Image 1 (tube, rainbow, N blue to C red):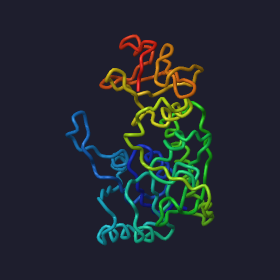
Image 2 (cartoon, one colour; image 1 turned 120 degrees about the vertical axis):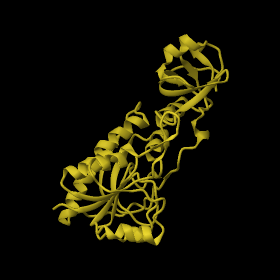
Image 3 (cartoon, rainbow, N blue to C red; image 1 turned 90 degrees about the vertical axis):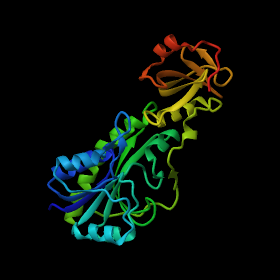
Length: 306
């Protein structure tokens, strides 16, 4: 049985889920997304979100309220008469009147093994912490931050060199399939929900600028995880002679020396162990191999970076 749905999402991560929902024959009566923001080459054009653009291609009405806390916005939401709402990285808090406006609830696609990594940056935090496994989950939303019961989950292994970008892309596909399976069960009345465990709760707070600078006094494993977790954006970085260099890919290698010292070609000593740079992006330039950067800009053995 097809459902009458409201879709709420903003980034490219959410688009495959919207596409899959429509492909399964569900009716999406409205898309809620963040309002167009300045962008383009000079930041002068107003850029519509990926979900906004996709919804327009499908002929779905698009709404971009700044808040859902006022009575007018809540009445507009309720007037769509949807059975449920699907939320994928929307970006606005849903107040209780919105959560209660759809009889089958608001289902959120969340990229972590809840209750681990509730919050805004679960993909990055899982990799930065060195987690070996994560999950994508369909959760029934309630007033608390990612506290609702879980209806379906799919485990995803995190390989030792996987970046946040790679995990994001994997979750984007797996999550879309998971959500349409959850909706199929919901339409049959067979989607059960299990409360989250009260133990093991961690929070994936937003990434700050301060966390992006590499501290080579940390272990090589910690630095490697920081690089992976922040790649491709916002990117972990170091400075060499006043020039900022993002590190997008690196590997763990054997080696020792004063922390932050280049001890071999593209290889920097850490508090313990060392990392070998593979792919970097100097400020104002395109992504390049670390070998090309070293040849063109100088990364001589013995120099200190940080």
